[in-house]
Image (cartoon, rainbow over all chains, first blue to last red):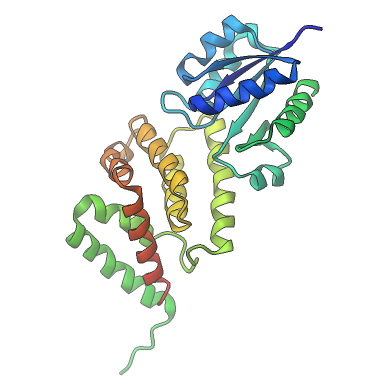
Length: 125
Length: 144
């Protein structure tokens, strides 16, 4: 079975590597990291991910700007996008049933099991 | 005749006195930042559960605005508000996160916010100093 392709866009280098390790250990995912929001669309066009995990606050381009760019890309029409952020608390996300402004969210810090469960939910949605 | 001030009147007078005094004592830069603390959420106690809930609820609103790709003065106000709330909760990581975002974003927002670059930098230079001043000021204000 083909592995699901996940692109992680987040400026926290250590965090992204840890998540990549955990997701790839599961065996079902191929993970690419992009630590610069400004390069996210370019990397996504090249990698063509099934899902993008997108941070909200990044120094060069924030999650909202990246989302707007990605939504313009015809080649990414089928790509799911989920925000992964420390800006909102776990409780805050749960109170909104994991969705803010119509977009799926998950709060940092996140346990690998919970992240995988949420990824699968979003991919099946 | 004695004037019987209600709490609101006393707060207003105190705020005016503080606002003038803060600028005189600390200068425009630091005085301006601390004035925002003076105006933050009347009667909410530092470290309280109520404050934590307010900050968490406001964070959802900020994130919603960013996801909607808004870049305006209202968003800057919400970010400043988050920075103050985080300082009152002694959440240093959050203070740094919001101050960094405020600094990056103020350069892109038109109007008076483009002049606030130095303010965010001042917070980032020593987040602990900012947290201590903010907490002391709010604690003092809550006594009245």
